[in-house]
Amino acid sequence: MARVRADFPGTVTVELNTNHRSTTRIVAAANELIDARLKANTDEPGPAVTVTNYQTETDEAHGIARMIRMLGQPWSQRAVLAGLNAALDTVEAACLVRGIPTQGHKTCSVDPRPVPC
Image 1 (tube, rainbow, N blue to C red):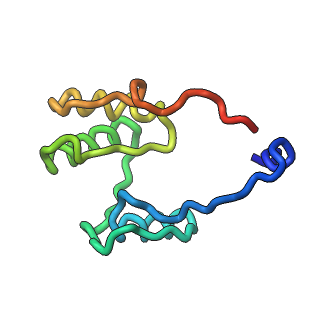
Image 2 (cartoon, rainbow, N blue to C red):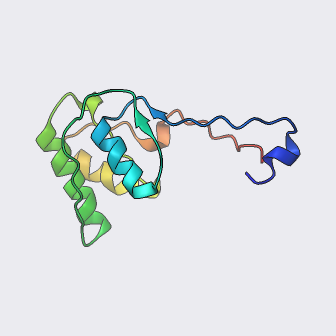
C-alpha cells in the first residue's frame, strides 16, 4: 500500500467508516479491539457482545458450531468471520457434524486477483 500513491499519481484516499451490516454493539466492540472510529448504520443495539476463550482451535470451532446451532435458523442470518481463512476449515467441519449447512469460504465470491500495489 505504501507504493500506491507513487504508482498511481492522483490517488485519493476515501475513508470507509460506516458499517452497514453490524449492530451498534458489534461496531463498538470492534472499535475497542482495533482502535477504529467506525460507526453503525443503524440505531439497533443488537444483543450483548461476549468473548469466549478456548484451549484449542478444534474446541473453538465446536464452540462456534454449538452457538450457531443454539441460535437456530434461518441459517442465512449466520456468519463466521476469521482472521485466517484456514481457521474456517475447522469451523465448517464442526458445523457439518451438527447438520448446519455451510457455504464454504473456498467458494465465496471474493475476487482472487491480486491488488495492484
